[in-house]
Image (tube, rainbow, N blue to C red):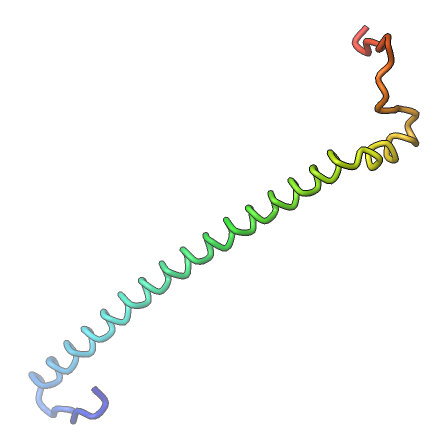
Length: 93
């Protein structure tokens, strides 16, 4: 459109204005599509971060499951143990 000469008459100006409005509207549609695509990409990124966080938690739980010394070390300061006694104490009574 910049290469087109600007008309001197009102009808020509109206036509040029209509063409410019059509271009702006088309660009608005493109912007809307790009915005929707960006929103979708951000949603996927958030989902991926959530999956990665869950995998890290599962890995940590597996480490604890296969290395009970980790829990025993934490319990040592409390006086509690993981060893089961023959007569467990009912803490509710």
